Length: 134
Image (cartoon, rainbow, N blue to C red):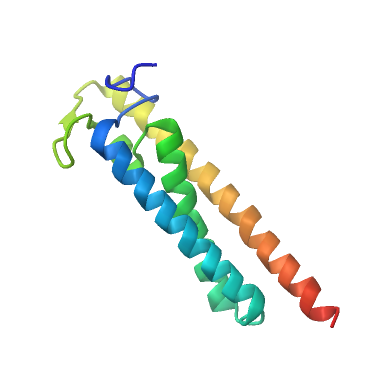
């Protein structure tokens, strides 16, 4: 797959868009790990923090999936693509391409939700077990 061509449902970002998303994914991963550690160590009974853990992991998962798939969720919903500088996106008018992009977007959101649920469940389970064995 060429990394500088729009391919419906497969590739809609490249260049600086991809680089920016890699940086965001790394930052979100670090924040998610810190928040998960905080929940494990301090807030094991605070379910609001657990909801935040899920939210951060969801954002992290979406960002990582965008980088791995070279596919932006927001652009996928709108039929857009960007292989140039940030903010210089193009747009497709082909209804079939837009439908393909939206299917890919929803699949990625489902994947991110499942990844987040598994990680959050693991954080909760490990915290619950370790705090009840004391």
